[in-house]
Length: 247
Ligand SMILES: [Fe+2]
Image 1 (cartoon, rainbow, N blue to C red):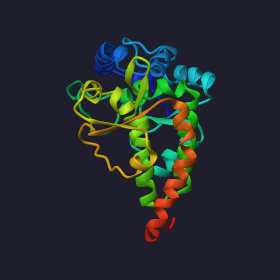
Image 2: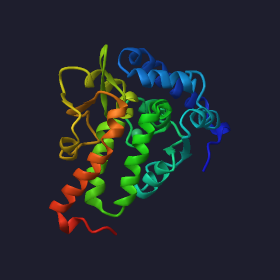
Image 3: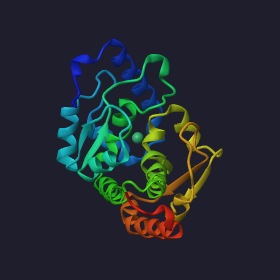
């Protein structure tokens, strides 16, 4: 699959512009420094839907990653296989004007605007690649994948980072949502230090704002947590031997 740029219509450009402009009002004070720097590298602008071939050139140069066009949510195996080969799955379609605030499935604004900037950060992509290799190893083992998804969820999608200026967002699930951008930094939800065991023990919901967020100190910390993820996952599976038989 590939992006067919000539298929975008007036509404698509309007949707991209509205979402982009709205988030650019919020993000300078809420998004992590690395995300904002990454966004600069990507050269995304309000008036133009990103062209994947240009985005890939930027990514290739900085971290060796690239986008792989997918129709929507892909099976776990494909998801992990792509990322273990430095390819990030991304859709090319945009939500409709009446769906600006909520979507059932991630669209291109989420996949590209919210995920791509951090794909320019080496520690972050190294973490993604290693996490995906664990995913491949346990592919077919639903329980293992469920636990591993929690690590992905509370970092790549809903992670916060403590910077000198305060708490900032790096999770793409938050960065593509105007509402959650404000909410996650407020006093309403619970904020925890990054703790792999606690994350593995925390189920999540996809249809509401999160009640719990985990805070990292650096992307290096994420990358260095990989051995612990492997160890704790193995430990959790040993406690449930009947579930740990791989397909
Ligand atoms: Fe995502």
